[in-house]
Length: 436
Image 1 (cartoon, helix red, strand yellow):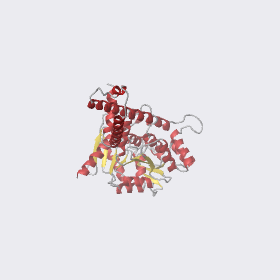
Image 2 (cartoon, helix red, strand yellow; image 1 turned 135 degrees about the vertical axis):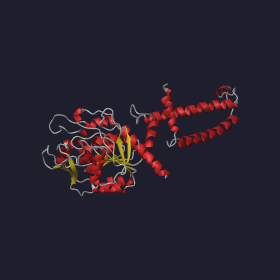
Image 3 (spheres, helix red, strand yellow; image 1 turned 120 degrees about the vertical axis):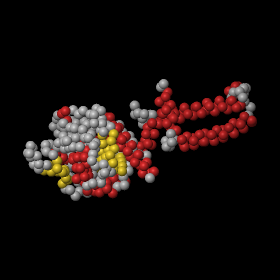
Image 4 (cartoon, helix red, strand yellow; image 1 turned 180 degrees about the vertical axis):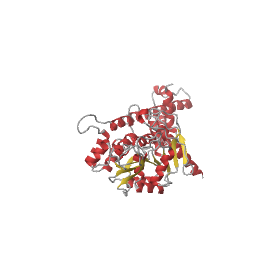
């Protein structure tokens, strides 16, 4: 039974689009021409030279000529195939890490990803990371656009101390898109424990900060970090301006406090419902690389992620929203699986869409992808509820539902389920559009 995977992997070389068969045919043609040339020379030598009697047995002249040709041809082909296989194995062993798939599988998957759509994913936090982790198996043409309004934790400290854009969401996206994600993710998400100076900082944030110092600017730091870690895709900010996220809070008789809160990290701590969020300054230019990616995209997604502190801060950048409206791409809003304490307590899918429209206007997205597995139990300490996909907005959007729940963390999206549902939707709509 052990030969089957190897046999299947070998046959994969013959799949259309691998870019291998044409060169195999050329190799076969070259060997045939060389064989013909060698044959002419050997015939001439055979006719003009006198050989010792032992050559009668070495050349198997006691066997009919047709069978001799078949036997020598079979042995020769077997030797060529074995030599090519061993040569590839020797040359490529330095590039294949232990535990990796066969070379045929790696090339096949790479070819498939290079043919994938151009995807722009807008958001931040764990939601965007989950989406990217799944998408990178379907396409290499990914652009993640992340918010720069983060002011809490390690990112906030680096922002205040070094004047950097907050690296936290960039770090998470780099880890999610890295080719060798298992070790990279653990390394980039590692937080230093007790100790002066480094306490609370993540290694990934410090790595990006150091890269910014070495390269001279934050943009270059993200680009070079991506190259070092061989990520699939790229990560860009929605703007390069130093912005602050503000929130106006609704009146609540049971909760006292200010009516307006500054700083992303403080919004969810207010204990009061959010009326609206906005950027200060509000007329900031969108990052040119992000706008260009949106205009050239085949598929644009917003979410999953914190509605008020991850998704909307990107869409509130005027150039980003305008580019989305102008783009011919398919546009999908991905709903969260669960509500978020301090931001969207008690929200339904309709509530999420209402807030989206009130902040950036109607018609920004055409499709809504939502979870329909409602039979989930959340840990009580999270104080969250499932976001039901029921909606009264069927005239404004086309709704698509699927089981998107991560079984280990049911309040989060499963990367594979999410990416497959999204790509199924994209290819289905693309096929329908092409047919029309």
